[in-house]
Image (cartoon, rainbow, N blue to C red; front, side, top):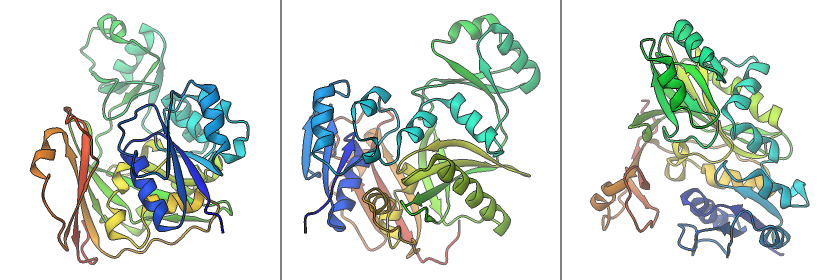
Length: 353
């Protein structure tokens, strides 16, 4: 029997871990990436180098695979449009369009009556003044290409609105700063038969706007868990999303707010490789290939630690133990703020964080 081939747009560490997971379930992978020295090269069955703007190469790539997925949400929409059989793309174009623009995403969540932080579309200096008066403290966020704190800055009531407006270099929104108690991620999968499953919910800790720690499972009330699951299921159903999707939530004293959506496997779910019966990566590939989704079972409680920049020097040459699992991404240059790997610390599964 011929093994299915799943094409992956993007060759970073998420693509690398998708390739590794695919091997475990008899799926071949074909990575398309502009970078010949990316983490996925050597881990995929097939590899093509090319620009996302190269229509001929994208068409050739799409014709060589059964299904196509992506490891990051900023794939140009034009690239997706090159692919003649849009049914091959899982998750579909709608998930990309939504998550590439913060304003579109917020309007989508409003439509579903899912709570989010108050916001304004920043078009004129009057929007800055209005936000200063209404929100007191807020954050200016670029609508596109913003991640790990990039394209964001704080807006205070005392700031000169003219200077603030002159700092804007791309379409942006202003979002009220929310005094939340902590952030959690819901990693949800959905298959072609509309079945959904949720991984144990993780609590996130950021340093310098970059995810540093995820702890799972998290100490949440039954009501909070039910709300998180309900909101996440509404999102994947409305999008007709096939595969894994992550939703970041703010937990405040009296409510739950969506922070943002990622239409893919997510950094806060890396711990599932070592602590669950099925990882987020394996789950994604099962769904994309048309196979039935699996119910993830917790084998161990877990603490995931991102290895950032030169911290990689502390982990090179170290070996795994029964309780400590090291995953390095084989990136040559340890740039400041760059994710170089992660470590998962395992605990008995009765531990709750």
